[in-house]
Amino acid sequence: MTVRLVIASYNIHGGVGLDRRFVPRRIADVLAELAADIVALQEVESRATGFDMLGYLRDATGYAAVAGPTLVRADGDFGNALLTRLPIRRVRLIDLNVDRREPRGAIDARLEADGMPLRVVATHLGLRPAERREQVQRLLIELRGATDAPTILAGDLNEWFLWGRPLRWLHGHFGETPARATFPSSLPLFALDRLWTAPADALRGVRAHASRLARHASDHLPLVAELEF
View (spheres, rainbow, N blue to C red):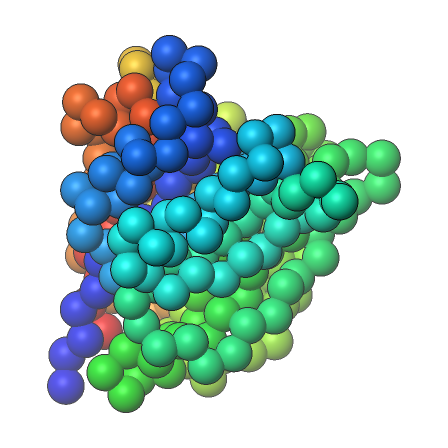
């Protein structure tokens, strides 16, 4: 049996577009354009606005939602999330915090695709090179610890250097994948958003979704991949 999926990674910038306006509907409309089975989201914000962004996107799109906040306060949360049309079997959160840096983490979700188990790890790494190196090493320990299901790693890696050690380590584990410029959305120059699969040959195509709406809805373009297991 062949299982075909579309997965996306999208830093939504808290729902604030390039015009500095908070317009959640634009993010929902971009998600509709993607028509993905799974979407890894970063910078899902409810603190600054008091608005339940993840709940809104879940209701507007019909996806099931998994929250992976990295900042949790009385006035709201901020962090990662996962939207999926696939059955969710198990979820755990991976701690990627580094001392004296903004809290970071990853969602480790076990899904089911037409009876096939599937592991999806969705993350958003730190801004400093040393921080990212530590976080990638910790992710690799997690990824090497369980190989019983096909695996997808997706997210905003914040890695500006295509020759940097974090990317070399991830390529060494998964195999090299295409880099598609997704940031800034108005004139993409940097491949900050990345995606890998195990097995590597499941990856059939990777593109930046550069519709007119996506260029304005956030400061990142969505990264979209087609998979075949």
